[in-house]
Amino acid sequence: MLARILHSSALLLLMGCASGIPVKFPQYPAGHQGQQLQRVLDGKRKLAVVARELPPGYSTDLNRLGLATEWQDTIRGSVQSAMQSRGFYSIVDLDSRDRRYQELAHAQSGMTRNQLQIGRELAVESILFVRMTALPRVECKIEEVTDLSTAALQLAMAAASKGQSSGDAQYKKPTGVTYLTVFVEATLVNVETGRSISFSNTKPHRLENDVGNTRCPSQLKAFDEAMQMVGKEIASNLSPEVVTFYIPLSDDTDGLRGGEPSRVEAFLVEGIKWAEEGNFDMAARQWERALDESGGTSSAALWNLGAYYWYSGDMDMAQDYFDRAMRVAEPGWMDDKRYVWTLFQKEKERMAKEGY
Image (cartoon, rainbow, N blue to C red; front, side, top):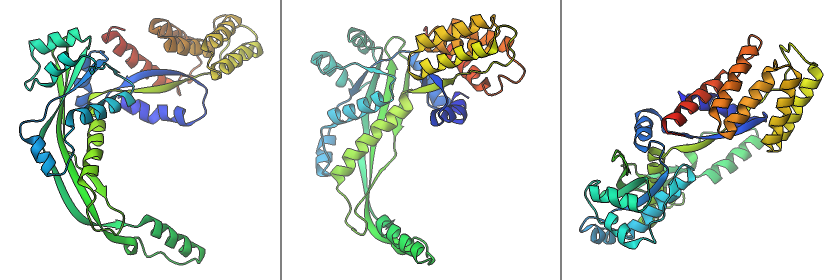
């Protein structure tokens, strides 16, 4: 439900030029995966990434395939970078804690009591274990690939001469394509509870050569890019993404039962100007003046102050102002704000569950 609200409504605010106050919160993956991830994490954000050693014999086979064997550093760096880009976790660096890190990295079995103890000693709340489950699979194919530069040139010439395009079939050329699949399993474990959630990658990475070159691209390049892709796949399945939502502000004076409407509106507008400059404390002062001027009947001032307290993290005060705004508002005033109210309730519930 939260994802649908964001997709259908928040994007309109992000893409439009509406005035608003930004609030940030984690958006979990859709469906059962996201629900399970939320239960496992329980709001915990301090994460360490541990790459298991390759199983015996894998390094030799990877060398035979012409692929890089610096598995642990490469996959750990890829996963950490992808996790950080989503803005949720605080990554704990284990590089400076060699002995304990090696104890974790060499443990091939599941989470044990010893690992839980180590996790606490390292001051991490969750550990992400990554391991290769099978040797990479490499496939070389010849595929028809569109030469985009030639197609664009021909289409431009056809348009200039008002000719008819015969489709893109004539611009396709046999081209070498490498498909490389890195089989990886990532298991996220909550150090305190021992709860875990896993994700396995079986998605191939596709790398094509220059159009018309039928030789397959470098396996080593395909492997490096596949490792980066795997990091992003792990992050998208085992990390929430912190999103920014802009709460819309209001400057209307509908339904006032006290005060001078022009003065109330002036304070509301002045507050929005401060908000546009990023000074939300000054904005709130103006909206409080608008509320006083209206004798407590300005739904716009109440709404804007609710937005301010949401931004400040005081969810109880935010709810109080939102409730008061809805009580004094004219019929229909909330029609374009209901999705914000629903989003606020869900976020308040999430924060309460996670102890914020």
